[in-house]
Amino acid sequence: MQEVNWIALSIFVLLFGFISWLGFAAARWRRGDLDLLHEWGLGGRRFGTLITWFLLGGDLYTAYTFIAVPALAFGAGAVAFFAVPYTIVVYPFLFLVFSRIWSVCHKHGYITAGDFVRGRFDNRWLALAISVTGIVATMPYIALQLVGIQVVIGALGISGSGVAADLPLIIAFIVLAAFTYSSGLRAPASIAIVKDLLIYVTAFAAIIVIPIELGGFGKIFSAVPAKNLLLAVPGAHTTGAYSAYATLALGSAMALLLYPHSMTAILSASSGRAIRRNAAILPGYSLMLGILALFGFFAIAAGVDKLPEYAAGFAQFHNNFAVPALFLHSFPSWFVGVAFAAIGIGALVPAAIMSIAAANLYTRNIHREFINKNPTDKQESQMAKWVSLIVKLGALVFILFVPTEYAIQLQLLGGIWIIQTLPAVMLGAYTRWFNSWALLVGWAVGTYAGTAMAVAAHLKPAYPLEFGGYTFPGYSAFYTVILNLLLAIVLTPLFNAMSGQRAASDATSEADYLS
Amino acid sequence: MNDTQQRRGGWSPWYLLFIVEFIAVLWPPFYNSAEPYWIGIPYFYWYQMLWVLISAVITTVVYLATRD
Image 1: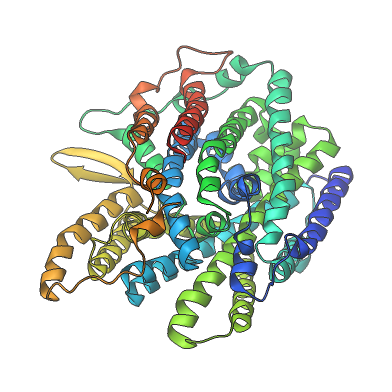
Image 2: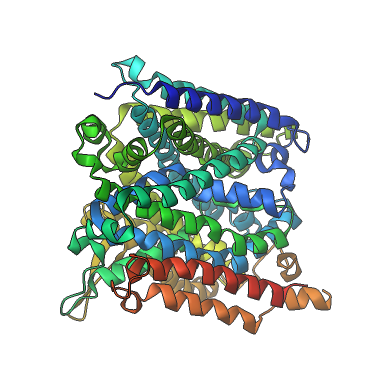
């Protein structure tokens, strides 16, 4: 077993302490009345282009991504690079669709996707479906962020048995829960700035230093097994790895911004213009993600999995240990501390935003809609604070007592579920044409079919769809959202006719979407 | 609704530029090859990284062309 790396650990603890202080101090930043839900849960919608860049960047490109994408490159090669086209094609959606959604939500004081759908389609059951999907899809995502922290804590050489083994994670969790409760969205927004600077420093140091240590990119790529260097060329009668790669990228891009934590960060921006500008500057993070994916290959070339000092780490965390091992192998201890702090803090930002987003959904679209219809502002924000705690506690319990594989599989299913809200939310931003009950049926069938496909594919993202003697392996989420949409289109005229074609009620008007 | 709002929210032909990046990165036959290498990096990898930069330029162009 590796020994505790005291220098790295000290730097790590120091940086962690600093951002904990920052998280609490953030309550006074751009001060607002934290007894109002939009102040606690959206930072008062006051973040300009630059803060939104840090917040959305820290939110969408999570610590788990930074561990898992290079781990996939390390183990499976080229397929891991789907993260790059994925984070290219997501931005037209942000630019076109979500700036409209920002605008209508700003105009009407909506703070969740559920609020928007409720106002647009006047159907509280559809809004409930959207909200429950959001909460359920978010929970395993929070759990995965804690996995990110677990891996770096393990890599610092801290180990133990029983409660002692989990103590650092529990401490990190308590800090996270406390500053989220007291400062709301201002906490992750301020911490994101520190965390992102650390991540950028780490990534750019590694992309320069490690290839020099390893003798250049030519040597690195020649260490990658030939079959993993490129996508497998499809055989006869199948679109093979090509369609799997493309649909995984496109489907993930369609799903990403529908997640509650994306919505929360988008809605906290101060203007639609800040959203559109961010569509142009957020690719900075995509570039870094691509660089990080290459770290998986660096780890192969450095042969870290064959070094005895990292054997225990690989045994415990499998390929997720590739990047931490690479950093330990390539960097001086003090810089390892900086890099691991970047990953560990990187987990806190999205975890905080996700728990806030889930809390907003529960408070607005479930509690207020179905339980207490007329809460005071203070009751509403208090409820959200409590729910954010419960959500995080659930994630912690999950990580401590359930195998990590389940969190990963549930997160995969979460992507399939959240994409089913696309017709109501993203197309709803353009048209009120759909019948809300048709959208609800489409959502239900899409969710069911997507889950069934994922199970049939043994909880792998790509499902081998057979059609006309050909096989089209592709992302289940992508296939089933098309099914969902087709159903909504076919059923809309049918349901409208059955209900006697009443004029559709809509709390929003076309001008509300433009800003 | 005034004129600028109409232009902002309505359709703009500049949006068609986004289609270019979808085609460029979602059609793997365009880039699933090791040759040509660039500083030792296979084409597959540097092509997609390059498109991150091109997509950012495209979005900037669309933003500037359609802003109020």
